[in-house]
Structure formats: structure tokens, C-alpha cells
View 1 (cartoon, rainbow, N blue to C red):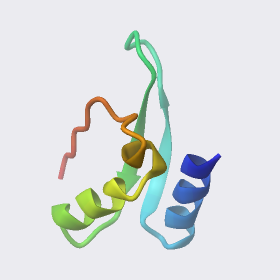
View 2 (view 1 turned 90 degrees about the vertical axis):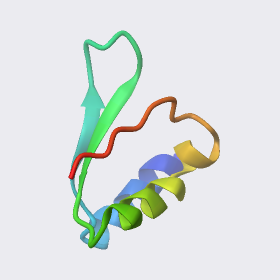
View 3 (view 1 turned 30 degrees about the vertical axis):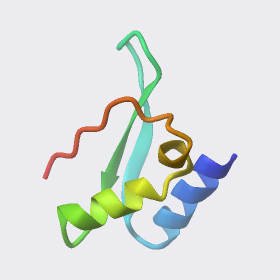
Length: 64
């Protein structure tokens, strides 16, 4: 699955510290804890995720 391969590459690069599904929201959801130099970097990384490219991300919240 391209999304998982993408996440694995970010783990190997030291950008993702934790990720996984979130349950109980009534829709499919997940979380990612990332290390980045800026919010812009996080936005750029997420934009490269196959889920983002395919338009599968309905809602995104970035907390710093």
C-alpha cells in the first residue's frame, strides 16, 4: 500500500515518531506525531502522502 510505504520512509528518515488509527469517531481516522523544523515542513510532507494526493484526507489538524 503506497500510504504505508510513504509512512515507513518518514519513519526511517526520523520524521515520524508515532502513528496509528483512531477509533470511536464514526469515520476512518488516524494520527501522526512528527518531528519537523517548521509547520511548513509538516504541510509539505503531508502533501506528499498518497492519501493526500488521492484526495482521501477530509480533515487535517496540525498541532505544534
